Every structure is written in C-alpha cells, then in structure tokens.
Amino acid sequence: MQRPERLEDQIHFLLSTLVQRELRDPELGFLTLTAVRLSPDRSVARVYFTVLPANGGDQEAQDGLTRKALGRAAGFLRSQLASRLKMKRVPELRFFPDGTLEEGNHMETLLSEIEKERAARPAVPETAPETDAPEA
Image (cartoon, rainbow, N blue to C red; front, top):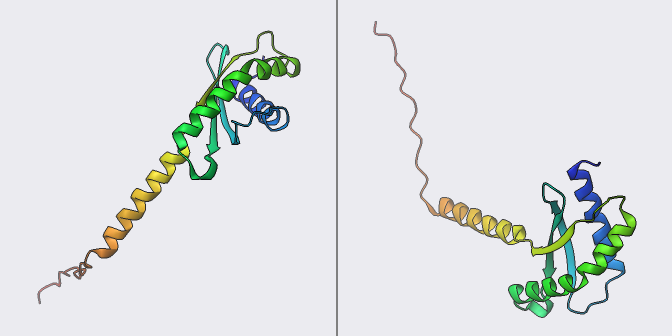
C-alpha cells in the first residue's frame, strides 16, 4: 500500500494528463487541476481545480460550468484511473474549485494597502538613547 501523499500525487498527475489529452468538453475551458486530497480511508478523492474565465466572464459561473463538466466526466476518469493504478478500489472523484489563488490575491491587496498607509504616515523621528554619564 502506498503512502497517501504519493498516491495523491500519482492521481493528480494521471488526472491532469487525462483531462488534457482525453476530455473534449467545450465547457471545460482553460482548466488546471491544482491538488488531490484523499479521505483517510481512500474512498473519496477531492480534486481541486482552477479555470480561467472566458472573455473576462464571471469566475463563479465558469467554476460552476467546469464543475458540472468534470462531474459528467468523473465516471470516465475513474475508469481510466482504474486501468492505470494498482489499487483494489479506485476512489470516487469529487471536484471543487480551488480558492487559494483568490485568497492569495486578496492577501496581496491587503498587504499593499498596509504599505501605502505606512508610506503616507509622517515619519516619526527616532530619539537618541540617553546615555547615563557618571557624575564626576
């Protein structure tokens, strides 16, 4: 039995290759599989994806269309995994949009706002430390 991290990486690689080479659904768009996480009993694989919205469209709508398209292809993808992996039972595939990119962009925006606020504040002059000179 393989370690979970290794198995997740192997499933991620195989799914990415299958999506790129085998799936021909126009609703998939520009799709990237970002991660695979297995449940502790390895019966369910949570597959995270990002998709570039077409023509600057709504990200949530594109995520929904992509999730439905991946859901339709889940049986095919699972059967292809079964033929390539040496497992008694191939995990059920569940697809989720990956929000880490948006969260990272939000954090970057917050940090740049903090830097702008710091730059706008007047500089506080530093006072020289007082030295205690021995009295003579």
